[in-house]
Image (cartoon, rainbow, N blue to C red; front, side):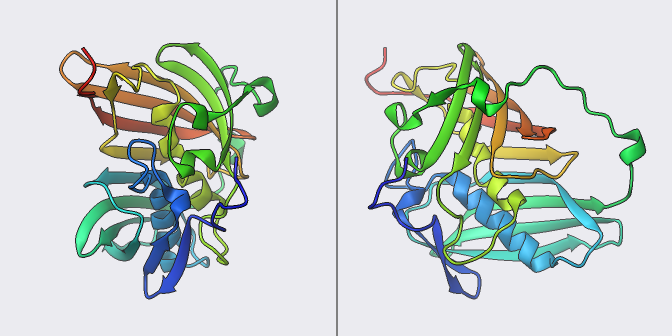
Length: 265
């Protein structure tokens, strides 16, 4: 939960693609570094601003490659068009800190066309927020970003969990952002929801996040049906089915590097 000392937003805009991260972005693996989740939301917002609103395309797949950690400081976000088109478009968004690349996102945008008559998305018993117990993530994970979230969670087994999250802070101070940017600003938390490994025994940060939508998410709640797997040679995978209050919207996959803690046997 937020406190009176919590900053008013995760970022403040400085102009010309520059933003200053606030302490509210402090991460779970290292509270002196930013959690990548709000940065993903910021990069999505930058792409939407670059594209404008008067266009018949929807952002449908976003692939984030995370180059490294970033301090809670000023970052710069730039957007380029790699493959222009009237019905299919590929864009790239880069985030840098002190001229060092932090993350690169490539996004496909596809034509908006009416298919309501053939719409189909199987539902498999994902619970509503009120059907899950309140989840106080800050009791498990450090960092002010996690502390700024409202969570509800149902633990099914080690490596399996269902949860709902929403942010108690805006993404950017004084700046209107879309439901899509807000959604992308939260989903990276999926990797910490199912806990296939005790975080005191091993760290398992993700080096990427790939999101595919068949429907644009709406509202403030992010629903995550998470399966986390750990392989025998230091690599893991988190796979999440994505929901909003209206039902399923897509999928998320995250590749993990498993690092044993120095004190773990």
